[in-house]
Length: 110
Image: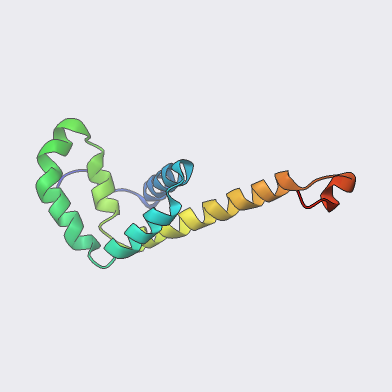
């Protein structure tokens, strides 16, 4: 009813944006727990959100309906969780590469 239907590319971009926001702030653990908890009732919560937030979203944040439409589906919530986990793994790999010491310092434990 409100908002437009998103293409798969736009959905992927929106999911990427949410995952980057979560990982940038360091909320990976709590976000994954919360997303796993709301996954079974995602459709109901999306409809309730639409019912209570629709008057405010029209005035304050019109693109909020895109988020509601996207996260009503369980598969998209699972995609966000996987994207967060992938981003965390990439960050760990980058940190590990930065930590490699050269020369004799790599033998020291501190």
